[in-house]
Image 1 (cartoon, rainbow, N blue to C red):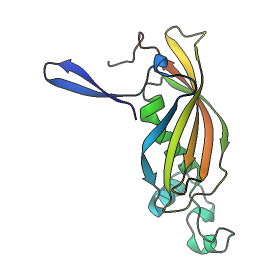
Image 2: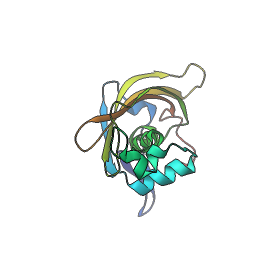
Image 3: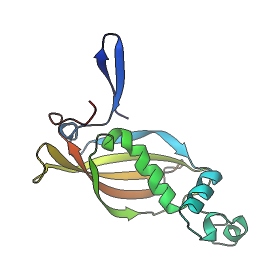
Amino acid sequence: MVRNVIEVGENRYREDYGRYYEDFTPGDVYEHRPARTITQTDNIWFTLLTMNTHPLHFNDAYGEDTEFGECLVNSALTLSIVAGMSVSDVSHKTIANLGWREIKMPNPVFHGDTLFAESEVINKRLSESREGDGIVTVKTTGTNQHGDVIMEFERSMLIPTREKGIPGE
């Protein structure tokens, strides 16, 4: 987690998160913390909020009769949490998400699993159409408490240079 403190006045400080375009180096890996344990309530609320009607996410009797023997965590919730864990490091200063690629879920996630995440910078370049902005691509990997990979994806973001800054600074 990138956390900086900026002095904004005499004896007055503001916390600041994230990175500017210049702060990214291909090959760098950021470990995102804190980890997050997913509860049954998280899963049921998210599933119903998003109108997902598949019983494998909220019907214990149904889940018990599947090959998994229990309900699974909604994969969209897993994606949301793993992506959210990366925000303070890789996208807190982002202007826009430009795209998501290669979202993979090689192992299931169950209630009570604790998720960990890390992102590797795989590419960066200055924008050809937006002066003062750059495009950064990261590969984010989520694992469970056993170290099993539960999710991987690539995400490209439009990120300002330090010189351009962000609104409100």
